[in-house]
Length: 526
Image (cartoon, rainbow, N blue to C red; front, side, top):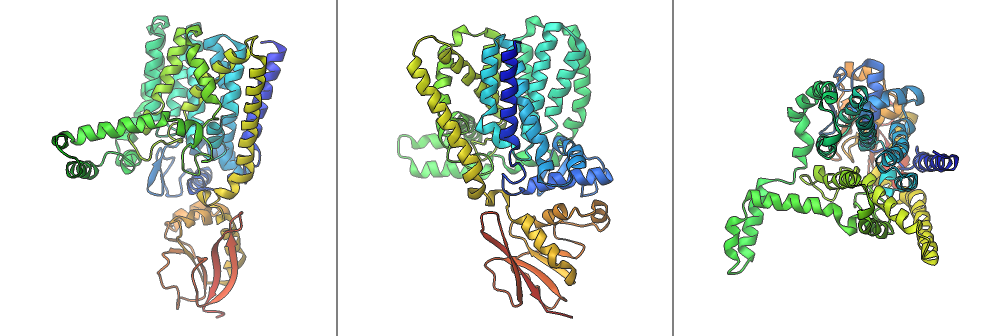
């Protein structure tokens, strides 16, 4: 690598890190409840070797009716040990691995394409990818999983060239590790491994794969075990697109609304046909131009909503790449096309679709094709004016995105990130010693995790008290209708709209100034 190429790579890495770390503790503006649970469980493991439910070094961790794989929790343990229990520590592994993914992606593209300029451009587009930045700035498991996938594939290609069993072993180790981070990789990673083995089958020495394969199988046994348990299937079953009652209602609706001669088709609209239709539509929705280039995922935690998952100008670059495929290495093309095609499969059988979080693995493939398109567009000697115009469009799009990310997003999507709960806990701590009990209204069903997180509540004490989401210590979490009067001197944290027979103490606002809770004194002095 030449000095100027190394300097450009360092610049891209610094750019990626700045985009992922700048104001990380306050943007996103609040700590989403899953992030709070990740952090407190990791804190509990650090202090007690148990999660806050009392399970010793668990491989599945309960999180508000869902069950999480353990990878991100254990990455958080050293982060919290170093930085403490706070927003930055919870998001640090995601931001760090997201930044490093850009560098790994450069080496991966360089390894299989053997072109520094293409590799630099591809890594640049991943560095500035709104899709990848979004999930690198929150405590998202998928970002860590994608880092392990990229690293594993890079080592696989390297091992193929050097024919080294040890490198194959590390490659398989990283790929299996991705499957312990997020549910989508339990589907995506095995499909990608099969693709690698098929595409490079003639260049692989089967003897070099025996030991790595045996180690991979041993590492997979615990994952297979937890996948077969009810808890391991909870996420897929709770959000499955395949519901018998919906299939039947759809058939009846079609039968009632259709006219002859098409009405007879209703008898063929059975469950397998309906489910195939849902899965096919769910899969294709992730290739929609609206999703990719214009509107993105409409969940506020998953995108800017006002723009696509990637920049609109990348549509042109990807088209240029498509027309340039004849110039690509066939095996490279097969790998990246396979990567792109299988990426939406984990999201096609669950709702809603399209879903940016479950398909984050599409981002590197899209960045690669954008890099290819940029290479063939900008490294031509002709069309200088056109290239300058397109470069201006790229810069304008990037600056517009930065404005959305750092100015509009924290205000517009504060509620999506449960912003205001840190302030709620600080206000409770200010008054709680004066009261016998603290009652908190369950607006979002999980305020207990914020009391644990922001107070750094002793996890062993919580376990010994057999605390739950409904109560622990002097704290009780209640529905709005529950009577809180005549129960001693109460600090009541009520919704902002509720009228309370007591003395108003203070308001709890989010960072955008929206009133969330009010603190009330009930029953006065003893």
